[in-house]
Length: 64
Image 1 (tube, helix red, strand yellow):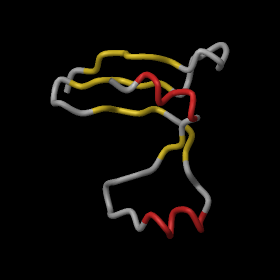
Image 2 (cartoon, rainbow, N blue to C red):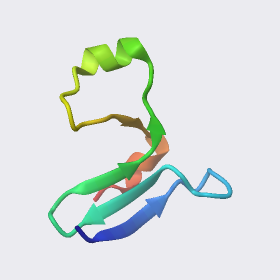
Image 3 (tube, rainbow, N blue to C red):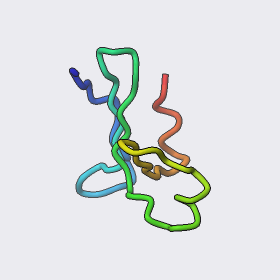
Image 4 (tube, rainbow, N blue to C red):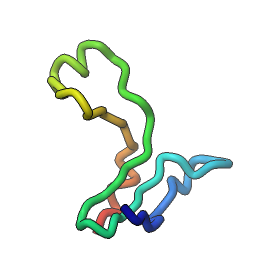
């Protein structure tokens, strides 16, 4: 999978994280804060091999 940097969070210094990447497979990779709230994770019912990350609303503008 090839990742192309789309945007880092301009309000996060010094690392610009969370970060959005576009893949060469027609998908996105989102780098964000780990969701570790047990109630939220139970609501998501994540299967094995999946995880959840949180990003701020201000990052949505970077999705094309």
